[in-house]
Image 1 (cartoon, rainbow, N blue to C red):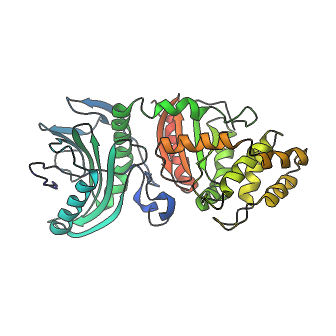
Image 2 (spheres, rainbow, N blue to C red):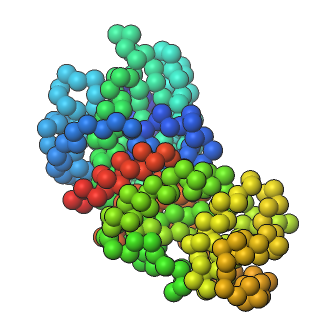
Length: 390
C-alpha cells in the first residue's frame, strides 16, 4: 500500500510502526500517549539476521524474505502475504520541510483516499532524537479486509526515512514483536552513541548515600519520576513492588530512581521540595523509606499536600534518626543541585513526561518507555531484554 505526499517534486510513503502495542493507548492516555507499546501476547520470537544496503541497516527475521528497489526494501513472511514491513528513504529537496508538514499532508491523503479510515494515534517518539512522528491507523482495503498500520517517519540529515508495518487487523499484534525488534535495531544502528552519551550518568547513583536497588546485574531500569505525578503514583502502587520482587531481588536487574520535575509552577515548587526532602532522608540512611512514604501519601497533582510540615511528618513516620538535622536540611535546600541535575538530563534526553523508564544493558541504552504500563507489559519487556543476546 503506497501513500503519497506531494511537496513540489517530493513523493514518499509514510507507513511506519509503533514499538509497543496500541491497545494500551485508550486506557493510559495521559502520559502513555507518546510511548512505544508492547503486545500482551507474544508467541515464538524468530531468529534475526542483518540486512544492509547503501541507505539502511536493520535486523530482520531469518525466515522472512525481502524485496529491494532503488529507494526501499520490503520484508514479509512470503511474497503473497498482506503482512509486511517496509523501509523507504526519500531525499529532501526542500531544506525547510518539517515533519509536521509531512504528517499533515499524509493525514489529508489518508482521509481522502482510504475507506473507513480511523486514526488511532498520532504523536512524536521521545527516544528518537531526529525530527520524527508516528501514526497508527486502520482502514478497509479493496477486498473489504480491515488493515491496521503503524507508521514512523524520521527526518535525518538530507533524507526522509519511513519504517512501516502493514497487517491484517487480526495479525497486527502478532507482528508487533517482530517490528519492535526491527525498529529498535534500525534506531540502534543509526543513532548508536547519541543516547549512550547519557549511560554513565544514568547508571550512577545520584549520591553516595542513595543506594542502587539490586546492583548485581548488567541490566538497569532507571525511572524518572515526579512525586506529585498521578501516573508515577500509579506505577508505585500497582507495579513497582512486583518488579522489585521478581526482577531486582532475584538479581536480574538493578533499579534506580531519578527526579524529573514536571508539576512545579512558579508559585508552588512542591515537587522539588519533595525530591530535596528525599535526599535529606537519604543522608540519614532512609532514602528508599522516604521515597516510598511520599508515594504512599500521594494526594494528587498540585493539591497542596507537599508542605514543609507534611515533609517533616513523613520523616517522623519512617523514624528518621535526627529530626533536627532533617528539618535544617529541607529548609536549606542543600540538595537543589542534585534535583536540578536529574531534571536537566531528563530534558536533554527528550523524555516526554513522567514516569519515563530507561532500560540499559551492558552500558548501552536499549529503550525508553514512558508511562505507567501494567506489570505484565514490564514483565514481557524485561524478560525479552534479559534473554536477548544484544
